[in-house]
Image (cartoon, rainbow, N blue to C red):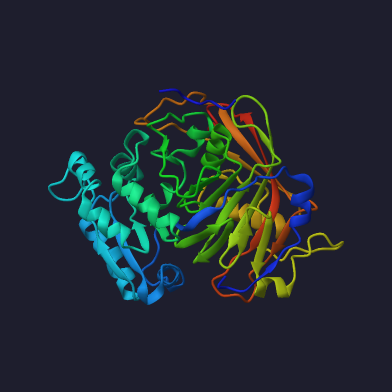
Length: 425
């Protein structure tokens, strides 16, 4: 195995971003996504009506018929039953399919046989929606798509999607949506250093969003922007969407709509330039889409929630602009920490300076790390800049909403940090 080392129904209003994108970006020629694909970032609360009710509505409302596939789960009987109950509570019909290697008495081999069972195929073909539970996404890939060969169940799910059905999943159920997925890559800095082995850190996904869009989950909570950027550069993705916890992205055709308690980060590499070696890239365009925001991948247009648009943009371009942030950091020493990239973006559009710097670096390597650190002194500088294309809106007076930030610039370069990083005073 090789290591790749790189040295809304919600009201909204269109942003003035499309002119810049159309004039300076090569066309993505984005292939529309069939049906409706709904990756959820994980940890979706049971009382998150915005996400759960919307999911049922998309699949037909009172006529919605879901099958739940708990392949990924450690406890598929209970997690699958919970997913069924959440769907039924919102008015849908739902049935749990016994396709899971961790189901009591089952194995990988028996789960693969279940993935070819005609009874399961008939239930899927009668459905208007398919829901994949969370857990370990490699189990879903190993059962439904072993060695890249689609099982009969996976083929049936794709038929549901092709006729306009809903394909949804939470956490691991979202990770499988891309044609390439993270299989087991918990250390983002190691991934940025090139620890990205096929069958280990990365693997084939199920490809429900096609080959042009990459999806990641638990995104802001677990600081995964570094690993997503590294994979996109390695595999040639131009657009990546990282969905945060308790949040869903509704993807239909070329349109993305964000619904839920948090938001999603969009990385656009269409204008980026890359240098050889560890992750070294300039002019990545980075946006934070909050609840109610949208983005059209074909038209290269962003939309922000109308209530924010009506109040006007943050006026960082005006002379005499004074930041109202209570706490401004000089730099972010762990830009891959929990929610750090969002805090840095917030400071960028509502702070006193036109740039924000951050560092990604492993202070220590865990003794049980699956791979030895290939470059202990290697770290990465993240430089966020606001320019003439950047737009931002704050959340003042809007309950449960955060900032919306479109089209900031991100440059990432490798840097050397001395080891030991510090010594006693």
